[in-house]
Amino acid sequence: AHGAIYKRRGIGTLGDAVCFSFYPGKNLGAYGDAGAVVTDDPGIAEKVSILRDHGRSKKYEHDIEGFNCRMDGIQAGILSVKLRHLEDWTEKRREHADTYSRLLSNIPGVKIPKDVENVRIVYHLYVVRVNNRSELQKHLKEKGIETGIHYPIPLHRQPAYAYMKLPEGSFPIAEEDTYQILSLPMYPELTEQQIRFVGKEIEAAVSMLNC
Image (cartoon, rainbow, N blue to C red; front, top):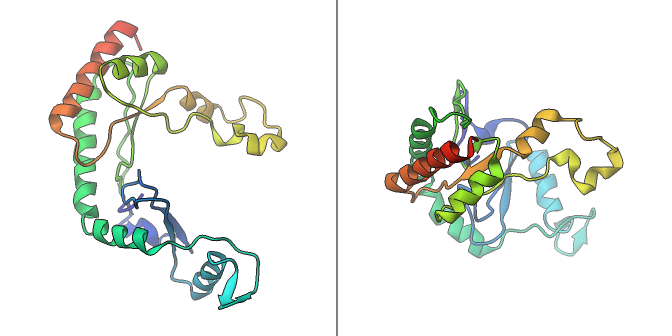
């Protein structure tokens, strides 16, 4: 959510600490894996700094068990350069989202993202919901349009949480969305012509498939 704003406050200022992913596919992505924790609490900052470096408080001295989560210089250098362009890229994403919404808002059976008051959405993804998701995705792929599903398994159904023994239907909205969500192409370099092509093919597919 790099660049997102809630009630005039940057997302990084909310809470005691905020985590950012710099995975390559994010709005601000590194060349490889990277991330950051931001905080204005010196105690939290010190603890995170120790945890990210094998629990080390000083050279060769480890106070606790930690992790190898140090960002390397190459990732930091790439992010420093890309950071200068983040605002421009964010505005382009928002413009693309507006174009998608105008094109898709009147297509029956297609549910689009809604703007939220006092929130600046930065559209890492543009996700629609349709009933015949698999058929629509197949149609778009045949037309050369790549889409994604973020995410195919709701958190409570992940094997890691099987011990909680949550039966199907425990979170009905999340489970329903899992079978309906479809992420459309979304990146700053998209052209209006490309977005219109996606919109046209979605409309054609819905007409054929009765999504």
